[in-house]
Image 1 (tube, rainbow, N blue to C red):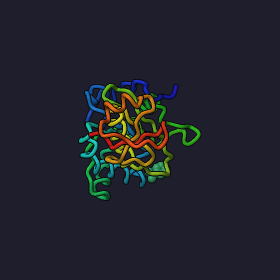
Image 2 (image 1 turned 90 degrees about the vertical axis):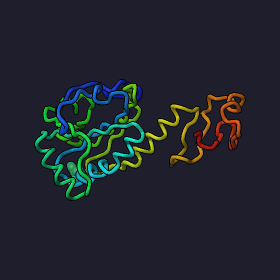
Image 3 (image 1 turned 135 degrees about the vertical axis):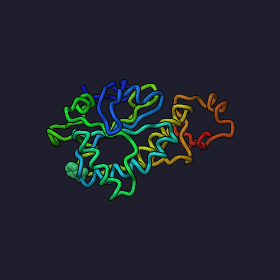
Image 4 (image 1 turned 45 degrees about the vertical axis):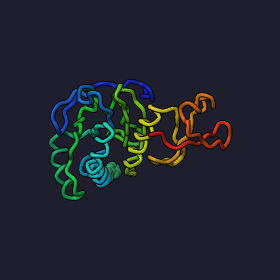
Length: 210
Ligand code: BEZ
């Protein structure tokens, strides 16, 4: 069955470019971004992995570990990593799962046979510190992902976990946010003593809480 938001991310053991891992142990108390790419030595994937390597400090700042996956073996990942460094200017600095037996791909439903029956699609799972799945994204092989968007979602999730707010369309960290409808005006006054702007009774805009 497909994995859904709020499900516990299935645990697994796998070999990676950083050696064998047990997924939940590897995460520890951190969040994780688990993402698949279709194949080693392919152009779009090469750019994506270089970008994730560049952004690794941004993920780390948010307490998030990143881990990639494809159905290629570990020695292929290691060879390809040289090309990623050479062409993207960033060395691979996070593990890539070598899922040649498709164990993890099947567990996370990363192979969509009507798109391609052997290669993984571009899946993304954001998993929180309680091992709950908080976001699922699926992109086709031909479209590279926007990892700034993944960071934006993490910022929204971590903010909205702490405060009774939600983030509006195209929100960026620091922008105004929305008071959740479940919070009465009376309770909102206690949480947001500096006030808010009521556009409609269900649309109350407030400065992003610190
Ligand atoms: C790529 O990463 O460039 C790619 C992989 C599989 C199919 C198409 C493109």
